[in-house]
Image (cartoon, rainbow, N blue to C red; front, side, top):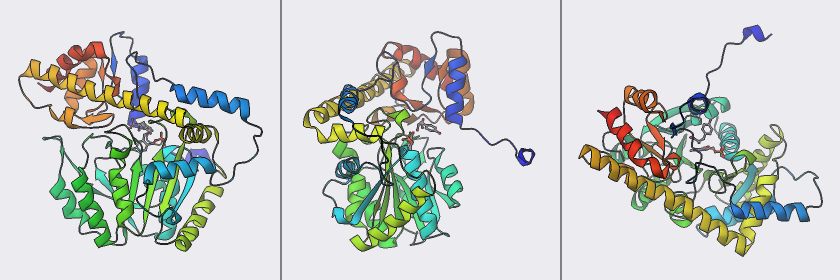
Amino acid sequence: MFETLTKAPGDKILALMGEFAEDPRTDKIDLGVGVYKDENGKTPILNPVRKAEQRMIETETTKSYLGIAGNKGFGKSVLQLVAGDSVDHARLRIAQAPGGTGSLWVLMQLIKRARPDATLWLSDPTWPNHKPIADNAGLKTETYPYFDPTTGKVKIDELFSVLDGLGPNDVVLLHGCCHNPTGANLTNAEWDRVADSLKRTGALPLIDLAYLGFGDGLSADAYGTRKVLSSVDEALIAFSGSKNFGLYRERIGAAILLAKDPDAADIANSQMMNIIRSSYSQPPDHGAEIIRTILEDDALRAEWETELEAMRNRMISLREALVEAIRQRSNTHDFDFIAEHRGMFSLLGLPAEAVDHAKVENGVYMIGDSRINVAGIPENRVDALADALVAAAR
Ligand code: PLP
Ligand code: TYF
């Protein structure tokens, strides 16, 4: 039967990870896959995570099934972390899911059930896995203008020229903060305008919140999501605990829905439970129990917030150092936008030949669209990286 199959396309980001691993040069620099790295180039296990795991080993009494929605304490804490007091929690439902990806998958299946003909609008550009997940759910996709690579900024007028023309048959995928791949984000005033537009047109927001706390802080990064929640009747959120808790391989995230009232929330939630039951039955507990333990314990939570802040500040100072080093070499302000961007990424707006030049000549690996992961910059190699980027851009 397999002879009917043809080779499926791979993921360019994961492919680059493999290519980097095989490069024998010892001075190579990995700015590819979006994984946080510390000053030693390691992706550490956070201290509160280790402590929570230790506590779990000592206190866990069963490995029996958890239930379709997953860990209840996790759900309650994550709703508070994401939504705060922006909306009546009786209108919210949450299902723990395998990562932000699993959450997006569940939510897109739900959109398909609710409105099979809906169009899902993705930012141009967006995370390369958004469209495949939508394709998998059988959803039509379109793109809305988002990023201007010549300025490094959001094309705000063009964005609203599309957003304001949408209707109830449309779903808009918004990056809650720390846009991937561009690093360019909406201001609070622009989020206000987005919320207002959604309310007026009746388009459904699907917010991808994969980097909460990686931009300007936990509550600053939740501004847009909370503004939207407080403005509209219905919304969907895909939360990921991969980056902010450093739990990548534990596959922990959550699918969240907002309905117009508690009864409507129950109905939509029953469909979400049905989707989960017929796909993977129930989520794994380990990552959820870690996050629950941390968020419910004042000391562990404070320690987590401190470590999250250190990761965030490190990325911001690397951005500033890189901009300064480029400025010294090129005598232009052409890359100043890197310091304005937030989150793990910046899209440099370089042509494919320049990306290739940096890789071949200097062992600097970035994604083909010229996205860099700023957390991958070794502190002591900022000058070498600036040399490579200036040479590649020439
Ligand atoms: N959404 C965006 C924008 C991402 O960058 C990622 C990155 O991994 C995800 C979702 C998926 O996260 P997870 O690894 O939790 O599935
Ligand atoms: O954009 C990134 O690099 C991260 C990690 O299929 C990632 O979001 C990349 C590709 C993928 C899954 C995760």
